[in-house]
Length: 244
Image (cartoon, rainbow, N blue to C red; front, side, top):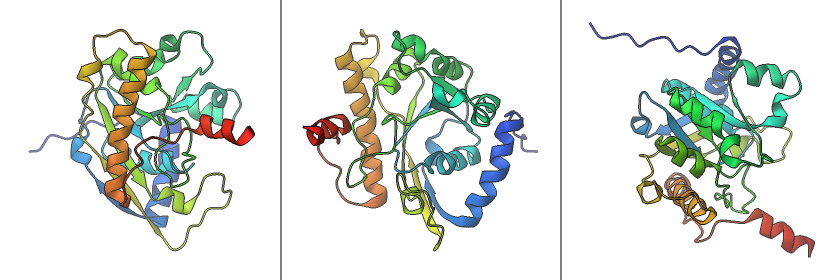
């Protein structure tokens, strides 16, 4: 007899979200999911994903849940302050990020702790939906590199394409029809061995983050076609140029 997998222990709020979102996702979208074999079945893992739409967490959450790796999302701490989001985020054990903390490592310690418990922690390294005019990944923050090096957990790069066709950035009304295909490609772990055991300087963290995001961009090119730009779009630099 085959061994039965243990039941996922997610809690009421997490299961409530799954019960609402999963049927809607199955009804309203088509799926092209690849690379599930690259997700370790147990142990702490970091998922690094590109960000093209506010719909992304629901789509990639569906993918990871189906692989029995339900994600814990890093979310800005402000979202944990007011109900009903406060109830949902806390009840579903999502991970608050204190972006203005003086000690960056301490601010990310809850994510490191979750990885030590064997959780799947999902991080959008860009911090928000891309502002790149062609929707390639933009220059990312270094938190993901810090979490990876502090925890030693493998980083699984995931590229996704399709949510932006339903809900473009800043759009308020989704385009539900015709049904769009949600494409997801999970790759093998990113090799960060060159950065391990070294002082976590800003230069090292930026370099490690770029290695991660380059893998995500290459996988995105495999999904959508085209060639990723040689340099990631810098939203801060673009805002300074526009205001000058």
